[in-house]
Image (cartoon, rainbow over all chains, first blue to last red):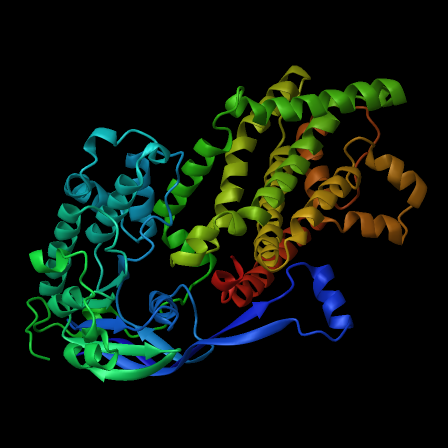
Length: 253
Length: 301
């Protein structure tokens, strides 16, 4: 087995800047005021993920999960330690970030698939199944600015699950969409897992996590505090003490 | 691990997935040209979106320069009296294309990274993509202007010569490389300090007056006689691109008995040095960009 994601003492600090213009910065420096504050979002985290592993990344809000995902996706770079990955990384993370409201659904599909690293022939080949997954054929040539928020998200999801990747990242996004669409997404995620692609899954939904993942990593205030099986992580976070599956879609899967 | 992977048998992971490497590693401008398809779509998007919802649409790209051109020729030409210079409209127009190219690339390029912040913050794309796309959009808009200029030249009995063509190509090469270098650096700096957008407006204004467009180079030379002020004036790459463009479009329309020295001496030597400097500046700008880019995502709120 080979590692596809390796974090070695990865640390990410944010400088919370108080000044955003040169003038204010100069003034603050002249007065001897602090220009920045440091905040450790990810603190000395080490773990590795093997190819084909499905790992849950768990923790309360603000524990550093999203920052860690951004380190893995390459949007952020670590300040200390290292983050190494293998192959193409994509996933259900910020699926509509590249959308342009003035462009049509069709144009956005091409643009966003290209942003995810797909080539023109690859997009052409997968176009029909992508549109089919999104369920928005009728509105394909309308500007996406006119879409409802559900349609908008569904199109983003469809593009994301269609792109080939070796590491598939899922960030708490399954909250959008109606139950049938959510079900379709979970099915697709399980297919991705069964294809042997590495999965990193961020979720508070213990039922979903149990169905997808074999291992879990727990972050607390940026530090890794648990690394092991999923049941252990749920106990560690005391998530098992309340009913967190209130919307009930986990049971249908 | 308990599961067996259907597609992993036999082939080494390094071959199948590539080596372990930092996910945010970029190859800078080379990475941009490796992803030409995405670049093409971004340029197309920019072209579609820029004038959407406006009455005249893409015509604005021609109306704005036309109005400026007419102001220069009518006000400066006839009111101040420069129209006596042979081919004055072509003198102005050939310089104006260069100046407009530079200021538009710089204006759009400087804002390009900040404008695409939702992508920069969330997706891993080569960020050099954005200033490069702005440059390509400007080139797309500039080509018809060059065509119009050339038609004007033909009407004014432009004489073909290899020297003229070479001057035109050298002018364009300087323009593209220098504009790319400056907008690459400014797009990154603008993420740190939004002041750069205002700075660019000031530069736009300065560039207009610091090249022989409205006035002639002779007017400078007759006052400086080659002293250090003239040398400093000529060190501006945009001046170099302007005089080479004038050598290409304006000079070949002048009567053959026109005295020499309408343009600076050693035109091509200076031009080639400027081109080399501009290419070196791209390398410097790329280093600066790579250095600042590491923190782009967290600075764009």
